[in-house]
Image (cartoon, rainbow, N blue to C red; front, side):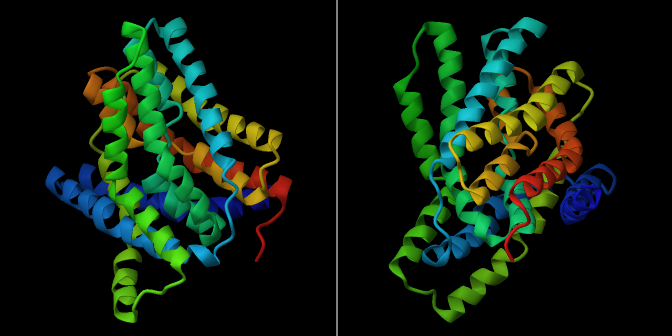
Length: 320
């Protein structure tokens, strides 16, 4: 078991070192916010979409995905969110908005900047269709969950216009567009022209490393000393309770091993930056969420490999 953990840790460690590099470039080398914002825009709008399009354009040759993984992942998200929401009120006496944001911080994983490169490194390209399926529904589902929780607590109802606007924003997201267009292209059986394929390959190859450096640069902009007690609760729920809940539901519905590995891996990841944007929008819990992002990323360098070890112990080593 120890040797398996060390192997998984060795696979994940270079990725977390890239996060540390990005953190150091901002915190100690003096790289400014403009550099970080420019790199982030390139990663989200060009590099990662190119990577996802190329991977999904081979969709017809990849193993089929059991769509029940959405039930396992988002079912666990709902259960963990409700637990975090309740603890926010019981332990910290937060208002409705604060409870909703704390709950969301326990379930919104960093599936893009950390999930994609980590899944490729530890599970291989065969995991990408399952990751992509979660990505397509992730922002829409969890943004809606937050909006409904806040608006219902205030008014006993929720705004359908806000839901429609959220859906349109998700559909215009470059990552979602790349996944949908790439899968559609792949289903045609066509192949990209050689020149275009090589160009996209050159753009896509550094996407994983750049995304992790950008993640580290973003983390360097936050102070981890704010709301540390609430941050510890968020980390415990996010890094332990959520992946265990995902795994329990996956086992209950007999989800295949690869899909189970993917959703547990994604569930074990630290809180994503979108939660901080939500906290900013509602002007609640910004410091706590920022601290949780940094702290959970550090802790997940140990906990995520441990979940991969447990998955291998149950389902055996990956084929090939």
